[in-house]
Length: 145
Image 1: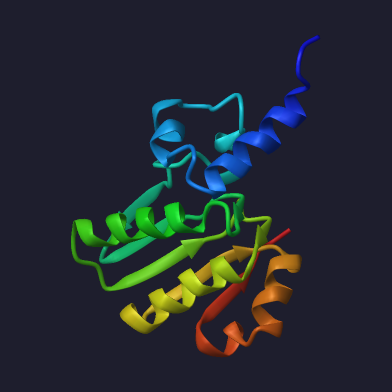
Image 2 (image 1 turned 60 degrees about the vertical axis):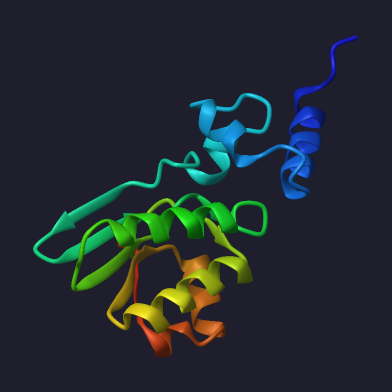
């Protein structure tokens, strides 16, 4: 009998959480069919960036939670370290959920860089930012429907 894909994905995620499977596994597979890494985070090592007149824009993944926050944070740090910029824009167009781990990444960026904004935020995520006080700390712009 073939093991259900859903079960295999759960086992794989647990292995990633406890570092039994390294993130290098997910980077070596463009679309991991076991754990759906591509679907969870937009693909580890695949955050899109755009630079324009001193503004660095980074596209956030679909989800930022405890299972992928470390990798997302590392990748954002690597992108920010490439070359200087005056303003950081986090484009949340694809972001459907963020946990406190995602909020921690953003607060770290605000403390380090000062000029940070989040754009294209869906109402559910905007509510998370509002309730946690982030709308008072940085510019958070809702997504136009």
